Length: 392
Image (cartoon, rainbow, N blue to C red; front, side, top):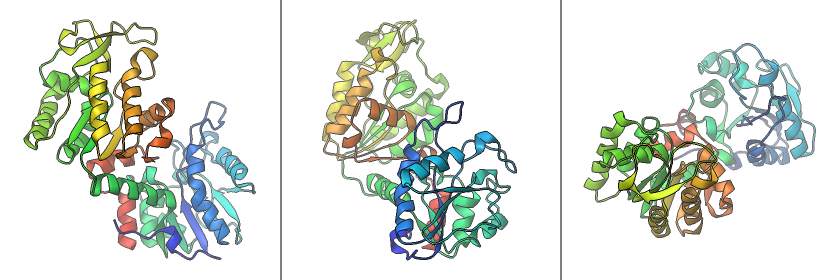
């Protein structure tokens, strides 16, 4: 991918507009419960401040209605936390599109929730031109929104005087490009989740690229069905068994593999207090729920991961939130951490598992993007990235 990077642009004394991803979770009192995304955005902001730029930062937050800023839509809590982290004042500016606000060299302001602006979600060119008039340099540092064509992520990049990728965006694209563009083999993908239908296009795309495709969760149950094995009352999409079979056949035709679990951990109910019973997959009873892979399967998968050259991970292999059904995902996480492979992981549940099992410092890159990460895995063109490439 060819795109301009922030550190290649002279921003000294320039008006810089950063589209960040500050969409942080909040509790009912609108207190921030996890500031990871704010911290991830700091390098771009601090670089511009060091260079003496007049800095404007904006982001979306939640799912607001265009044309109105409700209390739950406001970036006010983000401005307060950003000020704490930077150790300087961060003014929150409302009604900012037409530029009626001062910002001096070496100063940073936070522009209110961009998705409250009429025309943002429709990628309105007119709105983009008004925003472009605010800046000399546009920086997209919001990989998590790169799959959406919106005014601050796409149209603005096309009309701003200069458009470039911030360090977070660039790092994501570098990591994903390394993992999928020219991977060291064997390339192993781990795809977990509840439904084949939501990740079918990813599975199909990966089936033509990877050497081994490890499936977990409800997706694995659908693949068990496709292989003619019993799953009892387990979560699965029986109507998708044909598509799962096609992925198995496509992998087999290439000499690649989708390892089918040989043992599983079952329960009679879905609950944190349910008792797990390990059994060969052929012995799953009609009233069983498969909630994790068994130890033999986990050991086999760990062996594949130890031998991998590149690992891409999206989704746990069991209900790791319940202690009785966490061992499979724990074994996979530890194997990823111990492998010499280049590893990249993304998705909320995956990041939670990585954190729980203490392997974050041994995963080479943890993506901040959810939908964007998945669409990149599918091989889709991300609108925000395409705009940056056009401007390069």
